[in-house]
Structures are given as structure tokens and as C-alpha cells.
Length: 130
Image (cartoon, rainbow, N blue to C red; front, side, top):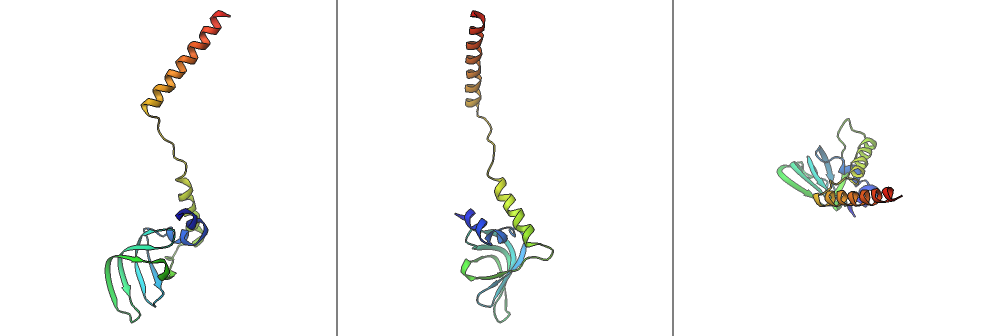
């Protein structure tokens, strides 16, 4: 379900900002500046090393901070970043995780070797009788 939202909304763009410092404006005229640590498909955001500024301009420091999706008004992109490049990189990350090759277990290797021996002996027996 989260992948659907990452591909079909701007949550994928914000997901690309994981691990970076940015500012997020909230609905109640306050803002939060810090490092984004996790974003889910609904755009709920977890941050660390946060400075919270309320509507009066008062600063509060928090080691961890959670922002619900409904409280996000605006997410500032860091300078020198392009939204299209961030989205492209995020899509490449999500697509590359799909195809992972698994190593063969000992049981599979043994079964394959046994099967090859059976096939080899069956064909070698036919060629000698012909």
C-alpha cells in the first residue's frame, strides 16, 4: 500500500529527502527544522535533531519529532536539489529492490547435481545401445 502512494503522490518526493535536513511548515503557522529519518506512504514524517518554532517564534528543541500527515502544509526542498531529480532517484531505488537473486541452498545444489547425474546416465545408456 505504501508503494502505491509513493508512486502516485508527492510522498515519493518527500521520501527522497530521508536522511537530509529540511524545514516543514505545519498547518498551525508553526514550522519544524531537522533531519528526516522516516516517511511512510501517507506522508507521516519522523524527524530527529529538531527545532520547533511555534506561531509566536518561540524555539523548542526535541531529539525526536513525529508529524502526522494532516498537519503538513509545506515541505521545503534543500537548496541545490531538483524535485525531478529527487523523484527519479527515488523511483530507481524502489524499482531496484524488486529483483533480488537468492543463492542456492545446499539442498537445491545437491538435488540439481543428482538430477544431472540421472539425465547423464539415461542419455549415456541410450547412446551405447544404438
